[in-house]
Image (tube, rainbow, N blue to C red):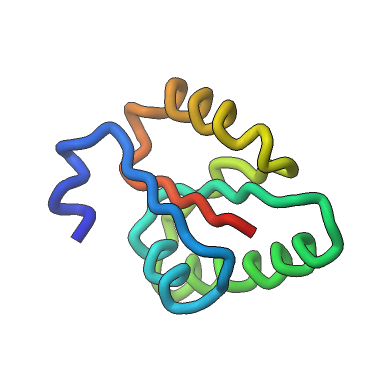
Length: 101
């Protein structure tokens, strides 16, 4: 579905809830790149390890071309990094996934 409108936009941001359910898997499948902001706390790191397994499965079975744009270890820097990343990469980003952990 995103492929039909991707040419109309420089980038598309899909903001997902902090869960690892079907919504996240569908968003990963629709994305060309993903960005993961996370807190530097034990449970956030544990959640990130589960997310990595899901991303690897999505890459293996659904979307082999998905790339990690960045992992931010502080949510305070999220807006700055998105602005910086999109200014640099806007010409090649068709879908960017932001997963809040």
